[in-house]
Image 1 (spheres, rainbow, N blue to C red):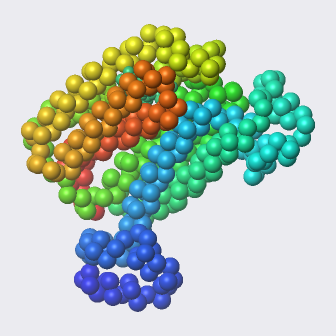
Image 2 (image 1 turned 180 degrees about the vertical axis):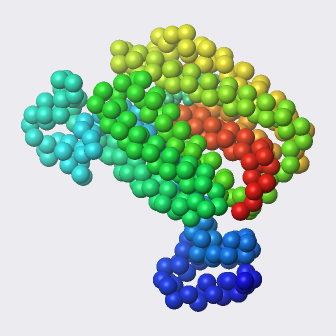
Length: 373
Ligand code: HEM
């Protein structure tokens, strides 16, 4: 049995693909301090290659989660700029892998060639086409990242099968998401389909967050929670209420989309007053959301150590929700500025991710400490 210094030496002097491994170790994924920490854990697993793979999984997993959020943001930009039909077909765009930049590159009767459900498409708009195209490229990249994350998760199979299972579930999720994406286009951006598409993105991000947090077992210092059953109750209630608010928000967005179709862009300032009851419920529900989260912060503050991870997460969650409400109010009273629509949606998605993290951290003892890697 080697100690970690000997392992480091052995590792650094390996003959097998040394350049690639040194690159991964030194340049991208982990620095020396982190590696030393990991090597200490490695003493118990007796397999340095797996330790490196595990570290790569963690870093890659985080990169993938950030990419999914970026995709959610870009998806929101697609919608707020009305670029959803920028590419009328799928997976190609106007029958090409790299879409046109000018109408002259399209056949004369392109509006009927690419008709959707028998209806001619709108005039070609290069900006819309390219926004949608970037969205698809980022979607493909995210898919690839999720695939790599799943493959890397295999290194955990013997230690914690749940990590591998969750990562592969995220992969299945992304395949379903691609299929849903095609359906969104085929149904001419049906409002309900957009909502399902968004919820699926949140499921994927949730699976990845859980998997990546599990992969940090033994490496993360999470403070103990006193009165954990009470804190848990409020944390679950806050997450449930925030999720309900998110669903209500998607209903407001569905209403906005149909009102926008009827009134058109020129009457944008009148969209809000033409919304149904859902908007008022969504608006007022924010009070409950905020109150519950203030209670959560108070409970966390009372029952965990100062400036620990849980407290920091709680504070950022409250800050995000306050900004969320501010963006909502600005949208409601200033004719829904296009730039705020994707921000409002992204913040709600990030808040959900933080809820998952928070609940995992509050239950860290129960979930992880008993079976260290
Ligand atoms: C905790 C607070 C809030 C959360 C978590 C939240 C969440 C959401 C979500 C997830 C959407 C759907 C976005 C989409 O699918 O594109 C949405 C839409 C919307 N929300 Fe909120 N919201 C909150 C507070 C508010 C407030 C206070 C207002 C107004 C006073 C508001 C006004 C709107 C409007 C106008 C839309 C439609 C935006 C669009 O068409 O893109 N929201 N909200």
